Length: 197
Image (tube, rainbow, N blue to C red):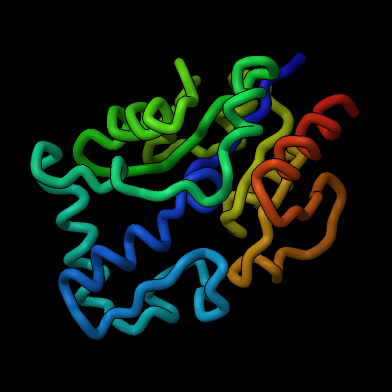
């Protein structure tokens, strides 16, 4: 079976909750939110969160000394990971992320292993690379994603996209190759079905 690509933040790990907690530490007026929050209406936090200086300061901390800031290790899972644990090596699942700063790749590997995703296949997409290009190199035709930007880019490249649906991506139009789901387990099941087509 051909591998399936799976984004991490917003699909497997709750970036929004972790990032907003860091913002709250820096600014008590900054709200704590998660991906399911209806206030989370745009992928670009500057368009809706309302604390631009706090957002920038939080990113500086994440990108700073990786021995002091273990941001990526502290995120919570988005959903129950039992199904993912059972299938990630069977299919296999290649985790793709654009995580930045410090030891993002190592922290992500440790995070996956902490949640019993043993020996994960992890690829950190670097600046200048597109997820669809990475998938093409790896022979992957199906990706699980939450970003409206990356989902559309993958669709435009002819990939199948399983979009975990949130308020910030409902505007992605219905189109060939796109399936919407509301949780990780269903995303994995649908991705496997699409991969067979």
